Structure formats: structure tokens, C-alpha cells
Image 1: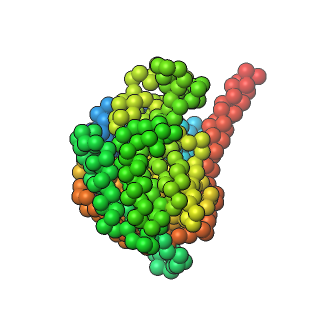
Image 2 (image 1 turned 90 degrees about the horizontal axis):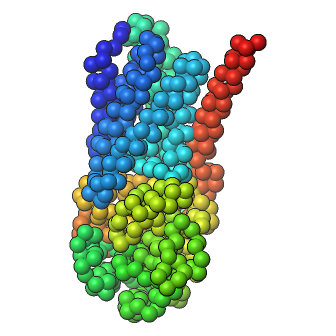
Image 3 (image 1 turned 90 degrees about the vertical axis):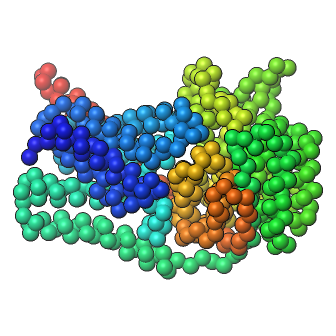
Length: 534
């Protein structure tokens, strides 16, 4: 059975649409992801079997992933049209390269190694996509199960790479079954072993996860936390209303919920919208307003988002910018911790949003800073922490995550290894308006809870603010675009899961395996050339 050009294009569109519908909040029919790759694999098989140009695989894969990227993250446009176009086109290109590498290795080394390459190339790509200059791991397929935490309790061992492997394995086995039954006309009775293996791969993870979900019990070690949602319009009120007025709105919400038992209060990203040098904070009226109100909260700890800067006599990093009077400064998307005794500590966001907070490759091409996107009062590349770190008060320790950081599993695991009792997420998702973006973002925090078995407290400027337990269940949440405050007792936890201790072993192993496969192909090619010369 041969595919016509029309068939290939129709299958490309089908594969992309199935991926979109299977992703959270752009369809949320997660089961479709278990068949979404099959049309693309059918196209690849047709090109491989008929020895057509490999460029066909590239073209059709690009169509699939362009549909996937646009269909699931179109909401980026509201925050940054230029950033959206870059994300759609370039991320689709990177995904296409990963799929094309599988096809290339299959073509050069045969089907067996080829389908092994399919797994390691894709999982390895998703892993590397967390770490390089163009990092954008939002669309990793393991993230799709964030809306079904009861099905992926085994993420405490594998992280999201386990979910991606699950999706790929089911698709490949189903594809092989389709290939045998339709293309090779084999009877179903002759493929019962394959059918049993397929059933096992689908059912076993679900059964194991449901058992773990229903038997997992949190150790009772409660801490009372309050999360605030002031609902400041990021496109208007945030930059037209004075910082004291915005803080007063925030502090009134805290007054309604804080009790004598409240240990930690979380306020959203850039809640202190006025930029300031960190060493000058005591000179600002807004800080005295915070301290005055905090004095009525029985020694609670406050963690609040802010836009800050630091002075350096010499250039400190690529984020350093010259001051007219001499020296340099770095701007930060920061969190301000004011502990029980009003001692201050600043935390700087380390995982920066491309274009908005970081200009990729500007270490090597400094002129790119001039082309950066200006958003939220920050222009060009922001400064970051030297490493992932947790924050400690006299009685507690937590993992601070500012906005985009909450989609980085190993980064969060490193914070938990440092002794974090729970996870605190502060964010401002109002840039995306009422779209799937803020819902997806909140949902990914459920994965962090499972991976590390840590409760999550989340403060979002316009929503969704929430509390998540250690199984990934949302136990309280606010509505979108409404001022609100929540209070809850969440359990602390010091136990380290396998994922917390070891990180994404599957992702790292897949990346190394991909390099070995490429090395093997290079070795065989060189040996073949030498044999011809001799």
C-alpha cells in the first residue's frame, strides 16, 4: 500500500491535530496522544520503504509539529507577538530535527536500531531542551498527564520523561500492529503476543499508579500558608497605579486570611512593581508599608515578587549594563523574603523566558541585546542566581519558583535536595489573558508535587492561585481574574524521592544513547570508507 502526496499531507494534519486535542486545555483528550504519532510514523514508513527523498520526512514532520506548537501555545501571542512567531517556527524546527534524526539513523542502521533511536532521540531532545539557550520544554509530552495525576504517580521515579516514553511506546506498538494488519495483511491471531504487550504497556502503568495514588499517605506535619491573588491588570493598572496603592490592595487581602498560626504568606511575581536597587530597599515608602502591616501578622514570613537591581563596580555577567556615573547594574525578576524577624533575603529567577527576559546567545553575540523584547519594565537579559537554591526561615524551608521556573523538574528537585519542606510558586499569568496558557501553567505544578512529594502553594496575580497536595490533587483554588486569598494547612515533607535524589535519569540516559548511536554511525561510515580505499 503506497501513499499519495495527498495522503501524506492529510496524515500530517491528522497527526498534528491529534496532538493538539490531546494536550491539556486545548482539548484535554489525553488518550489521543497514544495514537497521535501513528499517522506521522506511517508517513515515515512510506518514505523509508519506497526509498523516497528523506526531505519528505522533514517537510511532513514540520507540518505536524507546527500544528502542535500553534494549536497548544497560540496564547503566547498575547504577551509577545514576536516571541510567539519565534516559538512556533523554531520550536517546530527543533522537534522536526529530532524526528528526522530517528529517520536518518533508521535509514543508515536498519529498523531495529531505528526504532530504538526513535525513543532515545525524542526523549533525549526533550531532556536537552531544558538546558540550552533556546530552552522551551512546555510541550514535552510527559506534561500532558498533569491533568491526570492519579495515572502518573510513578513520576516520583521517572519525572515527565517517563510519561513521554509511555506515549511513544504505545504509539510504536500500535503502529507496528497497524503495519502488520493493514500493510502486510497479517491475521490478528498471529499477532497476539504484540497485542498482549501493547495491553500490558497501557494497563500496567495505570494500575500501578492508581494503587500508589490510593495508598500514598502524607505524613502529618502541617504548616499554615496564605496565598494572595490581587488581580492587578498587567497591561494597565500595574503601570498606571502607584506601587503603594497596589500593595494596599494586596495587604488587605492578607488581613482577611492571616491568623495567629499563619507561617508563610505568598504574594505573586512582581507584586512590587516599582524597580529598585536591593541595597536601597529601606529608603522606599512601600517597604515601610509592608513592615507596618506585617507587624500585625504574628511573625509570619512573607515571600513577595519584585523587580530589583544590584550595583557592580565591574561587569558581572552578560546581564550587566553600564551606568552613566560609572559601574554596572543588573536587573532581576526577584522574590523578596522577609522572615519572622524581618530579616531580608532576595531570590533571583534563574529560568528566564526567551525574548522577554533572556536574549539567547547574547554571550557570544552581544548586539542581540539591542533587539530584545521589552516587557514588564525589563529589557534585555536579566540576571540570575548562580545555582538553584531553597529559602530558609527560622522554622521552615521552601523551594521558591518564579513563574516559568515551575516547568523545570530537575531544577526544582535540586531545591528540594537542599531541604525544602514544600514548594512555593509565585507567578503573573495575566499576560496571556483568559486562554489555555495559565491553566496549563498551573497544571504543571501538579507534576512537581508528584516528582518530589512536596505540597505546592501557588500565588498567581490574576489566577489560578491554589494549593496542591503531595499526590498532585488541587485541594483549593481561586477563580480566574478575581481578587482572592486562600488559606490552607499543607503538609511539609523532608523525604527524598528517587527523582528528587537522582533527577531525570531516563532523559540523561536517552541523550547519551543518542550520542552513542550517532558515534556508531560515524564509526561505521569511516570504517566503510577505509575498507573501500584498501
